[in-house]
Length: 434
Image (tube, rainbow, N blue to C red; front, side, top):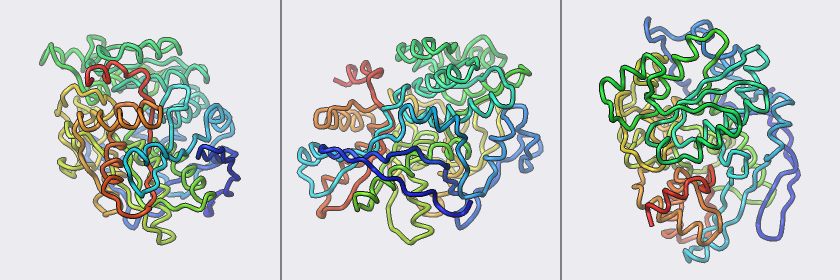
């Protein structure tokens, strides 16, 4: 398919919320419109480009084909669309009260993904990955998680599609965010702190540093090892890879349709960036329109200053995990052994960035800023006290970037914020800040 799916008719309520009437029928693949292809993933042993057979022990073939696809539109299976309909389309909301509080002439909208059952954008890919694994006959999925939003989302998806789910959560978040673990267990998932003594890689990490606070790279090693040693299991990744970002593009597609229906065009889009799935899902449809139609929407990736892969990392091939079990990815990286401080935005504590997001930065299709944790939480409080929604710690980075931009605005430009999740289960983080 080479043309865009039909534009949906929206419903607009009196308080500035715009909701299209149907769920998107296709995912959008930025690879079809990039002026240069993203560098391929390499085999960790041969250093040659990966083939489908190299990924078969970890992923179902349908996801492998999506990982390397250059088709612009990928059809969303009906079963996945029906589950999406539990919360999608998500609302695009005009932040009128925030605008007044800031005294800005700019118009601020936020695309709110916290309406999902798990409270974040992560189910957009969790449901898709669980579906394709179930179709292929997989009975169990393993994964890692930082703050716990991905682990909860995959547990939710597995519950709906009849799969077991085992999660390794970064130790710092496991200890500081017990409600995320409880959420996983409520959905039927099993959650371990990482590094653990349940895997060879985990035991090696503990031997090297018994008091480590963990990292996503460590947790990935454990989850990949657990999947690779179980013939009935596959691994599921919540960010970074092309197929994950592909599934998230329902966010940006809906936002574009919602803005079109009210006669608006985004001048600038702010999204938080850790591994890249939220940022890519929100921004890639905007970037694609820029490339195809000559629009000029700017995209700003807002990452934590404590883990600044885009603003300070090197653009080179690196492993996605600490143990070196994953393919080599061309990305902005702080190095696979980088252990970030235990900041509250656990979902952004990753040493690297999605190859396609990294490539887009290299091509000048987006820019990046680093936000200090205190600045992010101050913005989160300002947003909550104006709009009523408590943003997830991850989302506060995008809010901070947008607020700083809006304060300096001199025209009625249109700003879009990706509010990737709610912070109801992250209130201890807000309490620590206060």
